[in-house]
Image (cartoon, rainbow over all chains, first blue to last red; front, top):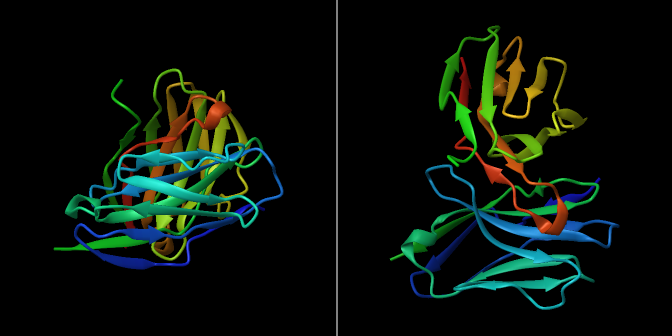
Amino acid sequence: AQTVTQSQPEMSVQEAETVTLSCTYDTSESDYYLFWYKQPPSRQMILVIRQEAYKQQNATENRFSVNFQKAAKSFSLKISDSQLGDAAMYFCAFTSGTYKYIFGTGTRLKVLA
Amino acid sequence: DAGVIQSPRHEVTEMGQEVTLRCKPISGHDYLFWYRQTMMRGLELLIYFNNNVPIDDSGMPEDRFSAKMPNASFSTLKIQPSEPRDSAVYFCASSLGLQGGTEAFFGQGTRLTVV
């Protein structure tokens, strides 16, 4: 079975600083996609960024970027210039032709003013 | 489109009672997923449907849980009988195929409390 592991249950970052959230996954498939979702206190799941496994270039979305290391099966999320509104649970997710939207256990991010 | 709609938003029930959670996916989406979120286990995939047909229910914890999708615009997750350990937030999500890394769109979730 495919697994997604987020080893940091909780992280803190000072406002305006940079933080990196870790995610590793296990798969034997070569074609898959990876996502980071944000879940604020409202419970709504919001897509932050996605990465196609066949692309070597790391995805970026404004202040959010990923470090995708395919050989190491690592997919970390970097948040630059952290804002109070970034405080949330962050989930890493994997999907492929066979395994659908498998999520990690999440990392709670606190942003300190 | 209003997005994925779940009801109720909150549900409190007594142990042993039947609970039915409802979901309306985004129109045109052909995949529908049911997840359970707990602090310990994060987001667990319970079951998913493709074109109203259950494809993988290996995540359903036990026979007390059942899910149906009678048509493209409606799905239910039923727990009978409910137990306190079923207390969690249940999410429904839908997606438009799985090509090109399509994202899954989530509803607001149903917080279930079994007392």
